[in-house]
Length: 304
Image (cartoon, rainbow, N blue to C red; front, side, top):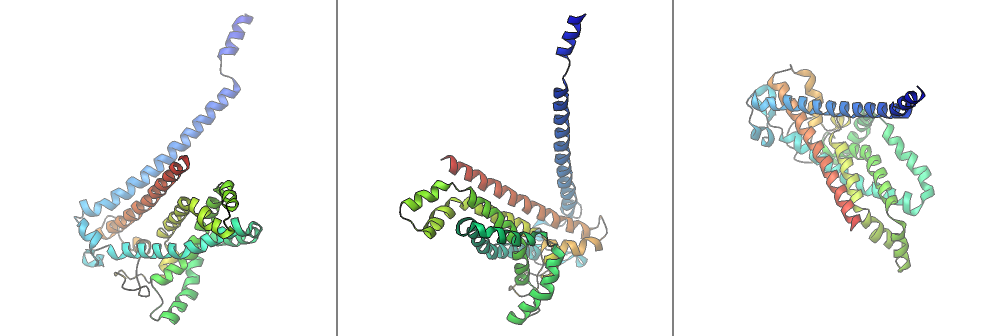
């Protein structure tokens, strides 16, 4: 009898094994739920977006390369919004990158103690809602651009200034982490060979951190590309191909937020907005794939 009880105890699952199985089940369920939700979002946006071309028979070439956007007149050229999104994203990244690298160098190489004061100040920018950025841009940036450059003040330049501040924390913190990840012996070897402190930062540290800095910039561009409310308040929302930085323009997100509530589900005017959302989604996925590619190349370089 005792032998049977002993065999039963040895063969039955223990408390720890049951807890482990329970943990694995919960983890698998959460991962499956996340994958399911992401797949459903992709399928839903793709179904709605592709209906423009397969159901409403809108030309894909016209949609991507035409500059005429007037859904009420049957004109569905999305080129002005695509160009507007790319231009304002690239310009904001170009403006934010030098400031982010400078702040990161200061916090990691020049004065690590100063990071105690500079980092909380930059972190405050993360917690500010986008509507506040847009309102400040509307009350401060737009009048400033109007005063200096003329025109209405609305346009890509105003959107660049607003997005520059919004993506600055993302690029700064990722660049800071990248610089801190550079091995210390790189700096020590450079200084031992007679290089100055600035030569070490410029020639060694930044060069070693280049892939990580590119990754930070791309993450910032992805953040800027998907921003909607703040850019909508300062860009002008004029669906025409921009001829200068100070003329009103439009982005994919600004047209989406303004039009999606004013159309009837299933109509061509509504479906074409979903097509814009599909373009926005594909571009965001493209940014993520580019980050993966740069990260992979960075690992290969370290292995070499």
